[in-house]
Amino acid sequence: MRKLSRTLGQEKVAGYVFILPFIIGLIVFTVIPFFTSLYLAFTEYDILTPPKWIGLDNFKRMFFEDKYFWKSFWVTFKFALIQVPIKLLVSLGVALILSRKTKAIPLYRAAFYIPSLMGGSVAVALTWKQLFSYDGAINHITALFGMEPVKWLSNPDTALGVLIALGVWQFGSSMLIFLAALKNVPESYHEAAIVDGAGPVKRFFKIVLPMITPIFFFNLINQTIGAFQAFNSSYLITQGKPLNTTLYYGVHLYNRAFTYYEMGYGSAMAWFMLLVIAAFTALIFRSSTAWVYY
Image (tube, rainbow, N blue to C red; front, top):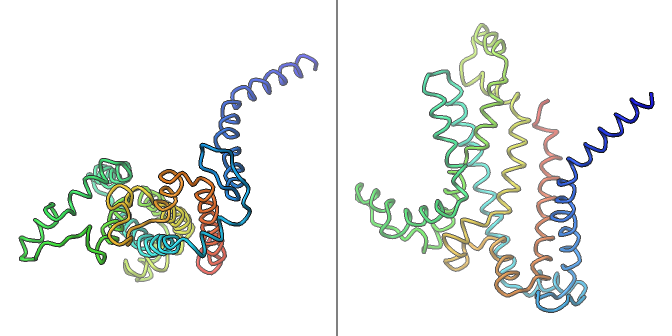
């Protein structure tokens, strides 16, 4: 028994040693910054001087004095409200197409997933910017149909739409998750429905859609959180222009914290967004009882 206990003790020690790097990384890079940012949200801090406690002044300034705060929040909210549903519908539609059994499907799956691997990169953002510039490929293509060139990125009516299109283009990850869900729908259900005379549309709405609602719920949560945290496309393509119509909340936060060195104010903004995301996530969870079937 002593030998067995010693062996088990050695295995526990070995296990702790193996997970020690993860625990250290979690504490150093997640837990400590998390609580530090909470403290800094109530301070005036410019990196160069020690933090000065100012209480709720950052939040008062944020809600009542910063003219770009509500503008950036509205832009981000509108971006999420439009982009997330379209992205989910496109993802599901492509997944339905790729769920068909043909020899070239593996190639198609890889081709559709590549935008998700590359979509958040600087190179793709700059390529997107070039495509939608005044003398870019998009205007050259529309000119073939007799359309006048459009200043996509400098027009307040179209600039946000360009960024939404880029977000929708990165549908690969949610598409793969939908595809996996579609593969898990039992074939026997389809066969029974076909025997009863149900067509493809009826089978989709009566069998497939209810069975993949948990996956739809999962993708909805992930995409909503990602949309509220959007940053790259606005910062790299438009820098919030024109007239701040593409000024994402994350870009405004970055400007205050890292351009003007207002770290305390930036931390307050970050915590407000955390609460907003938590509220929307809770709302989606609450609504799931009415439309998600397990």
